[in-house]
Each structure stands twice: as C-alpha cells, then as structure tokens.
Length: 203
Image (tube, rainbow, N blue to C red; front, side):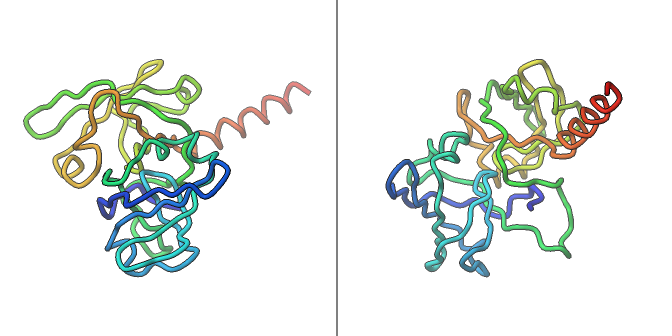
C-alpha cells in the first residue's frame, strides 16, 4: 500500500528482456534503496514492483508482460525519469490517499495551462474509469496522489503546484505522453457493494 506522495525522482537505468514478454528493470533511486531489501515493494510511476536485488543506489525488479501491456512502463527507456515511493509503514502519515499500486488504465496528457503559481493539466480518461472519478475526489497519476479539479466524460483536470511540477515527472510531461492512472479503490468497493445489494433486492 502507498500514499501517492512521491519520495524521489529516479531514473530508468536499463530494461532487459528475460524471455517471453517479461523484463527485468533496473531503476536508480538512492533514497528509496537506502533501506530496501529483496522482496520489498517500491512504486515506479504508480506501479507496485517487487525488489529483486539492490546494488548501490539502484534496484532491479521483474516486470511481467501483463504489467508492460496494461501500464505505461513498457514505453520507458534508459534515462527516463520515474516517480518513486516506498510502501507506506503503519506508523507513517497518510499525506495523500490509499494507493494500491495497481494501475487501472493508461491516460494521456491533453493540455497544459500555466498560471502564476500553479498549472492546470488535463488528461484523457479511459471510458471505463470515468464513473470512478469525481470532482474534488482523489486520483493517482503516475504514482502521484492528486485532487480532481474538473471531470468530463472522457477527461479530467488537476491543478499542479510548483513543488509537484519540480519534484515529479509531471513537470516535464508533454502533450500526448501516456500516464498511469489508478482510481480511488474506495469508489470500486462502494460500486461492488451497492451492486450486490441491488441484486439481492431483485431476488
């Protein structure tokens, strides 16, 4: 479990195919590897990966083909920056919201509107996810916990403060770039419970 508060802007070192459609990804991140061990979880652009090995300030993780296909990780190349966050500890502050590191879909950056102290950024939203996104609700974009400013049928927008622009990948993302999206898991639980209740009433 994560909180969507990026700890470090890391870098993809290399991606090595390991047979089939899986890969071994090496990521540089001195902070998140400072106490990392084999089996630990680290979110890379919002994707929960399991640490296989740590060498200095770099960790490696196995990435299945399913993950490469369903997220934007497959498009990353050596030198690309990535948002990194270690799994939350039970005694840590919940600065963002509950994030599983299970990407629900890939969105696309549609536009950027700079202002004096912040920037409004709009993203394309996969149709199947739109029902889980509400104004003032939470959404995770490339592992960053953000508050939805506006939402449409196939898009949503967020306001990014200077700190977010400087310390995460969103500061350098361009129009057309893909992003990993994870909707608020609480919305999915509510939908499931209400659906079961409705089905029970029908019977």
